[in-house]
Length: 155
Image (tube, rainbow, N blue to C red; front, side, top):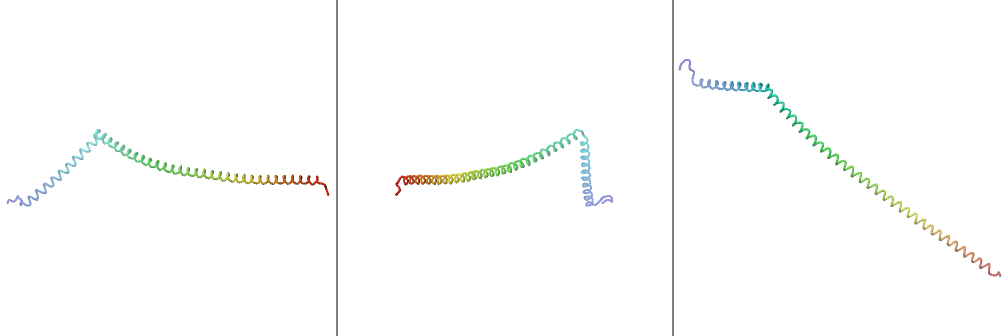
């Protein structure tokens, strides 16, 4: 082995380390080149317009999604409002029916009371008529008897 020659194991290890370093250096150079290319593209007006267009499209998509969510919430709120209104309307209708039923019942009761009063009045009128008629008949009978007595000779 010459003085300048390395042992085969060291040479293999050195080759491996050199290859690894070369790979890392190549990877760094590629990354730097990509970064530089990206930076140059970002300065290109066409690329900038494309980026702005992409941002606008993203904002439009977000706006559309938010609008859809708001619309869905509005539909739910409107449905809930309608359901509450229907319940209130139904309760009002029930109240109205109850009031009408109470009015009908009150009218029936009032009519029944009037009828009862009319019947009692009629009975009273009939009784009074009978009493008047009885008194008239009694009076006539008394007159007739008085007249017959006055025609009979006195003894």
